[in-house]
Figure 1 (cartoon, rainbow, N blue to C red):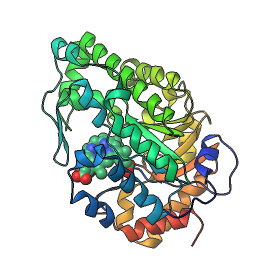
Figure 2 (figure 1 turned 90 degrees about the horizontal axis):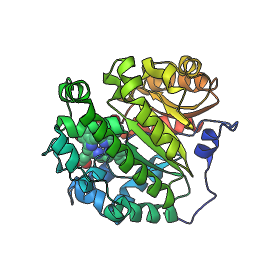
Figure 3 (figure 1 turned 180 degrees about the vertical axis):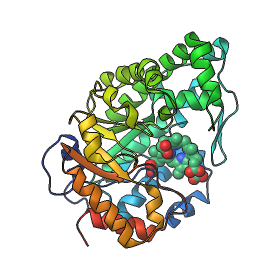
Figure 4 (figure 1 turned 60 degrees about the vertical axis):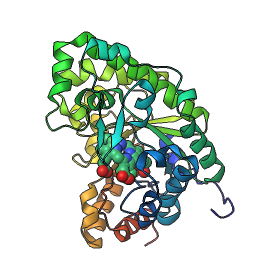
Amino acid sequence: MAEKTKFNDLLLKALSKERIGRPPVWLMRQAGRYMSEYRAVRSRVSFTELCKTPELACEVTLQPVEILGTDAAILFSDILIPLEPMGINLSFNPAPVIHNPVRTKKDADALTTGDPAKELPYVYETIRLLVKKLNVPLIGFSGAPFTLACYIVEGGGSKNFLEIKKLMHNQPEVYNLIMNKLTESTRDYLQNQIKNGCQVVQIFDTWAGILSPAEYREMVLPWVKTLTDSLTGAHVIYFVKDGATYFDDLKILNCSGMGLDWKIDIAEADKLLGGKYCLQGNLDPALLFTDKPTIKRFAEDIIEKGKQAPGHIFNLGHGIMPETPVENVKYLVDLVKGML
Ligand code: CP3
């Protein structure tokens, strides 16, 4: 990267609910296969190696910041990488596969929590390298305990999430043991990311939306609350996909930002969330496969509605997809930045 220019702190200002001229913009999964520059690096190493090699992880983290001009960088890693030191045997194909699913008390007892500072040194090294180079904030991240539990109990992705649902209700003590361990290790992991230089951390609860509001409230939210209450020194953004039916309950969370998928209007979400949070979102990533006038129409509507919230960070409602045309992504970022 060229000489460091003035630090762009729009993201931090939005999260602090300061009045700013336009929303900052970054995109979930902004580094990835839709970019030829990513595919070039990825053709030389496996995904796991990429995550574990600080120079390469740093390079792909910087790609969208340099090519698209986003207002934030997100650490390149994966939510499942910190499960390895807990005893999880993981591979990416590219979808994740867990070869030793956790389904009994014995399996849950065998999960180790340990000291992630010692066990994930490459993550912290990547963060330190990035902070030296970036002139935008660095977002660290983790999976939320429930989403991580879904992966380790199901053994990978799932269609109907029967294993985790059976476990929650048939063996609640095993479920709680797993959630307790995941909450503890996630807290240490995120706090170490903050210590090494991340100014913001996002907690991805990709699968929490599979539950009923009562299940979410009783069996998931308390763990998220424990986790978010324990983090200090950075802004926290919590993102639940398909979570709009939980918003009334989410008001108890003390975080700065709340991520929205595309199924709810920002103005409506702000009302349901009590006007408490900087809202992040929420363009349907599929719209990036349409044309510029369509992208413009929906993005401008989101920007307008975002003005009603105490803060707004422009983002997609979920991760960018591998076949997305880069030209449309660049167009979207320029549009939000008021450059068109
Ligand atoms: O740019 C960024 O956002 C940072 C990198 C990042 C990745 N995964 C890289 C990745 C982040 C923040 C994630 C989070 C993640 N990983 C989530 C939460 C966000 C979401 O999408 O809901 C989840 C559920 C995962 C689990 C995961 N990892 C899946 C389902 C897959 C396969 C999906 C696919 O795209 O094929 C992965 C692999 C993965 N993680 C890739 C990347 C770039 C593709 C691997 C490759 O290059 O072969």
